[in-house]
Length: 181
Image (cartoon, rainbow, N blue to C red; front, top):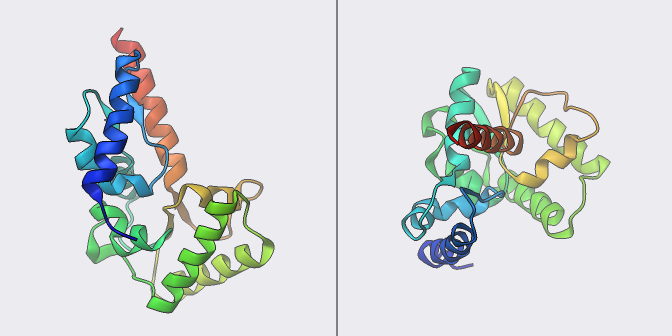
């Protein structure tokens, strides 16, 4: 897959510009992966964009986390969520494990399904190993669809759920916009 930030930014920027022209006060891209091109998006549109990367950085700081592992697609994990998480606090997964996480996440995202019990058990065992062997304080769920794994029951390990943080960020932006009127 070609990494075309400029093309993605221009594409999302044109859609955002259309939304602003139609009266939108702000735009939120509600998936993590497209934030790969957040700078390009911001430079190609006319209004404010709610940036998930800001809430990731803030969420980690607010929680006082000093050691995390990131789960999501390969690009999100390998880039420490596009640079939003400092390299020195991230425990990187080995290549085989990172590929298994990526493949599992991709299957869930592309097929619009919740995680199966074996998939949830895999993530639980992985998180347990990371917290026990590498002193990871929280697992950063950096894939929008990973929230569905734990929709019915919270995991047995500490998480920072990027989808939930982003929803809170969007709601706060809407509240601030409403207050400004």
